[in-house]
Figure 1 (tube, rainbow, N blue to C red):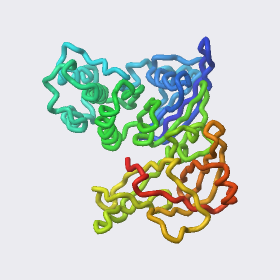
Figure 2: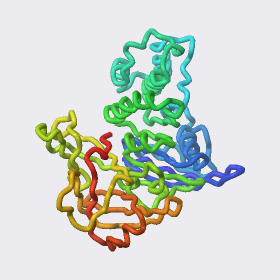
Figure 3: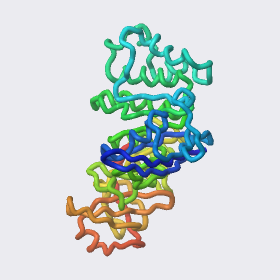
Figure 4: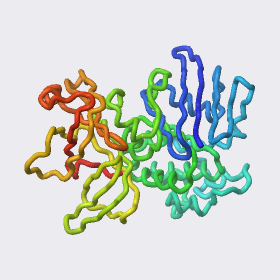
Length: 357
């Protein structure tokens, strides 16, 4: 099962030449600066833009193939869309807005009560959109899209208009949604925190070209990408809880072929989670320190060293058995440690620096 997109299209100011294939179901985050091609992909997948050349296939279902003349109209694609603004009908209650998406489709596997429960909007059903917070309106908009029984969910910066508090409110619901419904989802965002928390796969775009694509744990840990030069650069590691040490108030996680200790989590042994390790929080060493307060000393191999001339630093990509980390250090540190691709290295990380998502 996969999402496969190939499209070429010429706009007055830019030529799009995009091709990628990622695993499905799950959330595929389209990430890049404005004008890079993110919304072009969303519009082509929805059938709102017909590219000059294009093939779009979702889980074996061909939505478009300009070479053979296949072009499903939008209403036959069964694509649910969620935009920056909720676009709810102001004169309808929340319940009526939700049921609007059900009018033109036969009953399917996604049920009204399940969506209401999943998105936590049961207490809102009798209210009008103008009485809701921004986060509540977006949850209702997502529910309306789901009740149209989509085969594909398209989300074009759905949290861009929300402040940090409202984003923090809605992100857990989006995480629940992708886990419970197992739909293929294309998700556009400029925000690294959204990508880190939600993405299963990631497609990096720039100036109408695909720079990189693949599992988020691979893409986010590459030192050779512009992503690694951002202030918020950091690796994403998919983990499982293997121990809760109540006496030490610590939880031990296993992920990427490595062990990570974090402050005690309210999760049972065996539960899955993901962590983000900021590059600026990873210290490098060539041998274990004699005495130190941090709990995480993770052995790895240097895979890449990339210069960041803007910050007068370098980003070191550290290979783990099943993943990777990033560390931002000075050029002098690389020289003093004698680091080069293939060198063994230790990544030193404070437990409190690891973000559990």
